[in-house]
Image 1 (cartoon, helix red, strand yellow):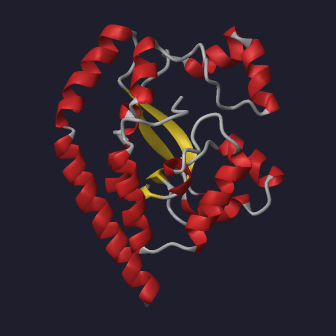
Image 2 (tube, rainbow, N blue to C red):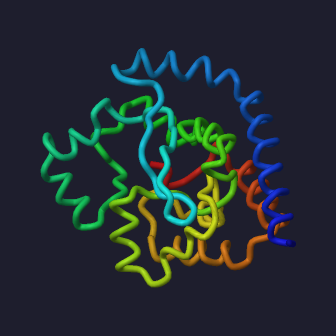
Length: 209
């Protein structure tokens, strides 16, 4: 009963704060799409399948920060890059698929704003482990002990690993440790602490690529 109550409160906080943030960042919803259109051809919003709570897949939204057809570029136009991905170099600081504007959006975390829609839809939470692609989840659950335990809760826009600087090309094992710590020690107070830490560093993220 207590868990159900906390889940309802967490969901209420998610919806309330997501709506507030959507209003506060309304200018970005006007300016960023225009800049994306001017910077490179392709869709404004990028949809990609990710693995969420209990292994359920969903489509996560982001402002597009890569060239249109980035996956095709990876597989058909740059076999060297594909080899690096297969070796496990799945986050690249100098990924040639990222547009000039995309690097700015990523460095300021603006590309993540559309995930507020995922939160309102109930597919994500404001706070939780970051979601990964199915192909990476299958690999990581084989290589990293207890990796899939992080899927006991909803994926988040921000998380305990991220506010501790573990983004981009950082240790996956270390990130998993932080994610599991969050899952095993979750509380509303812990969520609020992570949200406040995120707001404090929102436009000063390191390893954001």
